[in-house]
Amino acid sequence: MALSPSLGRPAEAPRAETARPAEQAAPAAEPGAEGTEADRSARGEQHPAADGARRHPAAEEQAAEARRPRPRGRAARRPSGRERHDEKITVYVSAEELMDLEHARLVLRGEHGLAVDRGRVVREAISVVLADLEQRGEASILVRRLRGR
Image 1 (cartoon, rainbow, N blue to C red):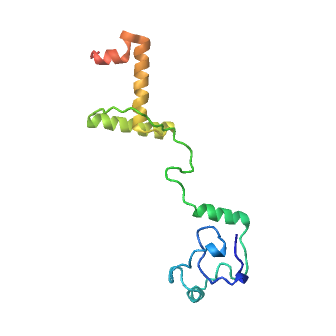
Image 2: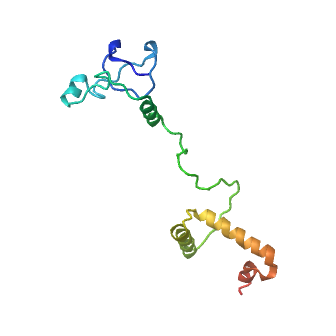
Image 3: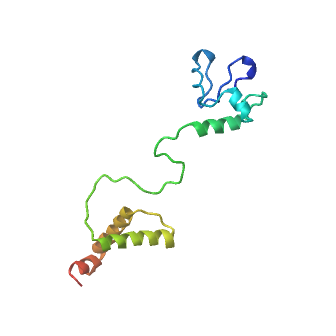
């Protein structure tokens, strides 16, 4: 709710919070925070309610939404598909293996349009290798590699 200049409220900078009844209104901003009316005049600025102009209600809502802080971690964007996992293992890899893993991640993103993290690549690789072991047994890639063939 916008206050009209005829209510006799002292000139002050626009507030970030929503309008409140006069008895609950917060004290005026500290002097010098936004400048006095004379300072705004010297800079050629007008008081926001100077000529009685009001914002369109939709513009008011957009302005209020822009001032409202977003909850942390709740960006308004497409979900990444990343999920939380309850169990953890630590795997030590060589520098070369880590570079190969990072290279695979970049190839997936650059050539295939798949933005995934290294953990996702590792989980998918494990899934594929275990499915192959289940299906092919002795002839699986995992058995052959572990035997050195």
